[in-house]
Image (cartoon, rainbow, N blue to C red; front, side):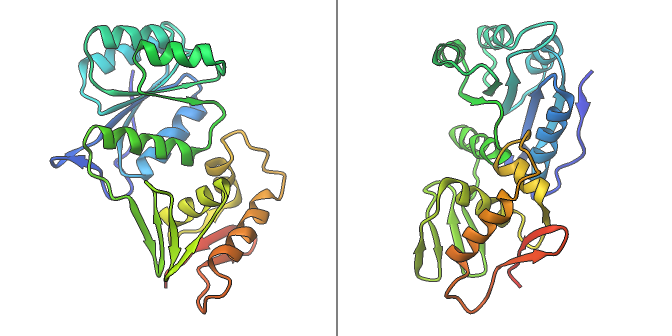
Length: 242
């Protein structure tokens, strides 16, 4: 039976005033709940199921703008679900999640009807970016600009500016900054940051989060009178605009 998540925690995304609904079909319950929670935080309404049979039934009977579909599922494998949904002319965007990493596997999934393909393990920041990209293709209006104080990030072009200065970041620095900006004025723990930027099975025993926060500080705070990135001792980090 489908597990309903709570209402979205941020500003709700919508098409013509209707809430955006996403279905997550993933048998690894901890991961499924983490995906749902992260999507919910971004303002989407999310349903979760843990097997291919229920996923197929729900996707066929209810209108979802997007389906996040694992391939290795009990009862019905994800590829079969994907094939049958497309055969039945279900128009939802479908983002496939899988541990299968060969080119042949990805090609098969895309040719069967997937709109995008994300390999496990993945960073939640990338998942959100792919979801937003797919929804834009469906005509969902979403702002591509994030702003905190005089810092600006364009999620479509990946351009970052502070005041009149253009800032060049590495891929991981960019994902870290995007995460902090999306959660401005909210403390993020090191574990949250590691899962979002490096992946849900990341080894949190390393100091890589602190290292990259320091890199990011040098890029966006050095040379400016106001610091935006702050350390909360013993907890994590926060990007503040006040």
